[in-house]
Length: 188
Image 1 (tube, rainbow, N blue to C red):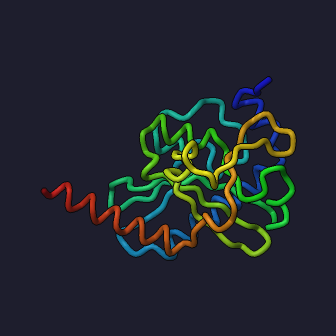
Image 2: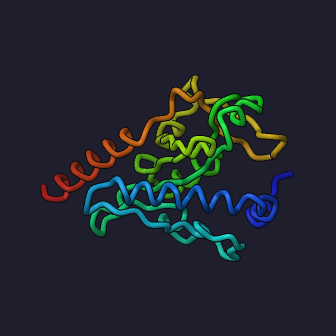
């Protein structure tokens, strides 16, 4: 039996405060360390909110927690997740850091897997790890991705070992090169 989005949101209501803190932490870090004219905004439906939003998202920017802009152009989409500690990531059948398979579904529906990332906050040391969703999009051919269920949940998550997750500098380098490429392509 699978739960609908509303039932899942209600089930995890006690975790909203922590989720909101993670989203705001990643947002603040992006805006502090990206050069101008880059900026990040909470655009996701429910991002930064601790109340139930009755409607569903209507477009790509509402589908992801954070949108990163270069000027007025939306360049990247970021979903934020997290774990309390490294030890917490080892407490399930697929040890490693995990991403909900529904996040991959969102990037496929909106055709932005090449521009969508997951930012995973490890609460115990305020570390943020980055993973391009395009890597998970190739999960069928990737031996480093395992599907499992966390803590008896009925939803599938995709897990990888910590060595696959990148530091902020990797995300920033990707971002700068992507914007540069798109700018040059637009001028051609």
